[in-house]
Picture (cartoon, rainbow, N blue to C red):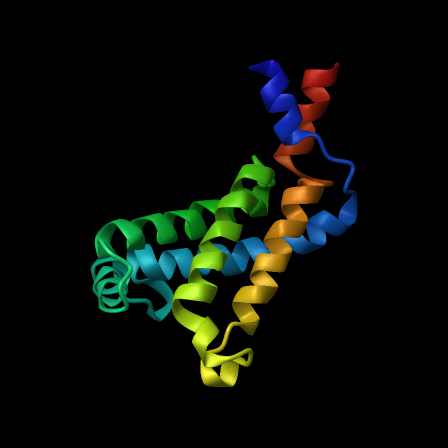
Length: 148
């Protein structure tokens, strides 16, 4: 188990990962809070579930719960830098689903409800998946403790 945790938390990313983690984590956590709790003008779990059902992501309640939880808890994990690689992987999957299930047919640009924002979030998630958490992260602290 110690070896698995060491592999998940190791990072030499430096400060650049922190600069990416914080804003991306805030964005994801806020979007997840909209889906789960109705915060920040969101529709909450029931409203999001109904919308997901209406676009063919069934069962809507499960899909809303999975998307909301991935975004909210994954975003919080990015902010503190805890298990950044697994969180980034879950967020990348959520963005792939969002891009292809909702936005792709509308083209690239956000003005047409396109996928450009989802693509940017996907790229950031994949970058953190490769780099790890970097400086000022719980992962960095865990990695140091495991290696000492």
